[in-house]
Amino acid sequence: MLLGLSALGWQACSQSSSETSDLPYLGERQLVQREVDGQQVTDTVYHRIPDFAFINQDSQVVTSLTVQDKVYVTDFFFTTCPTICPKMKSQMLRIYEAFEDDPRVMLLSHTIDPQHDTVAVLRDYADRLQVNSDKWHFVTGEKDSIYSIALQYMVSAMEDEEEPGGFVHSGAFVLVDQNRHVRGIYDGTDPAQVDRLIRDIPALLPKKKKKDADKN
Amino acid sequence: MLIKTKILLYVAGIAALFTLTRCFYSDKQNEGEQLYTQYCANCHMDDGSGLRNLIPPLAGADYLENHRDDLACIIQHGQTGNIVVNGKNYNQGMPAFEHLKPGQITNILNYVQTNLGNNNPRFTIQEVEKQLRKCRHLLED
Image: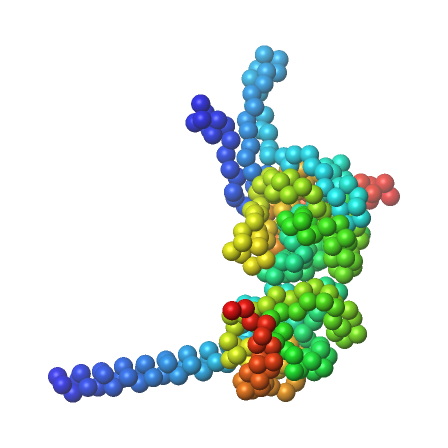
């Protein structure tokens, strides 16, 4: 039974693009059989980020509806982090600036230290970064919900007293498409990988310009 | 046979000496930069530019000149509360690095003072030790 289940899903770890140059679908996927006109058809169901609800720096509720039809980049951090977080934030700022005027792209940073990082602390943090809360949400919430959604994004985050600052977490930036499928995982502390992320985002955006050009 | 061994030993000796001096010199020269990368650059960035209004810059920071006498203690024991750098307020705590030795702190300070676009007077280890004596009471037992 277990063997059968594991045969149905597999981990897609490869970052390499398929022959159509589309970005890969990352995470576990399942093959689902269904019958159409008496024929057996196999559908691939990709890993999808489940519904969520957190609170952002403006005390607004941020849910899966907030990111509906958006391409978003997400990460996990904490404001008092003495290690990689400031570097991650300086790289996230590059993405912010690259897509500042494109409402189809959003940024979502989760604190993994909700006890300290209250709405007021996140508000001050975002203000000092001088970023707009419509574009870049800094969210907090129930610790368990944050840690379990991190797993869905395939990002490690947990408490560890041995670590500087008390938490261990990865510096990953996760690229998510309009249907909440994970399409790329990048090292948010590496400027070269963030360059690639900035180049990859437009591949997920609908080709609007072509249509506009046709109208003229 | 004996002569051959002697020459070999001689050559090996010179090679060892050369390698050792090279290590010694390059380590001393680069220690400040290496320590900066390891302990400071995560927040202050590789070029010392800091992070917007969150983390103060070290590049061209008037704080380095205005608070020269406090710098060693700030590295050793960290800092909390509001500070003003180049006319801007910053309020992000800086962690302590209590395990760093006076020599290492001297090398970090000298890297910062003479790189990142700065051209401030260097520190001697004596000056750093003197500063650290003022804040020794902050060290945990």
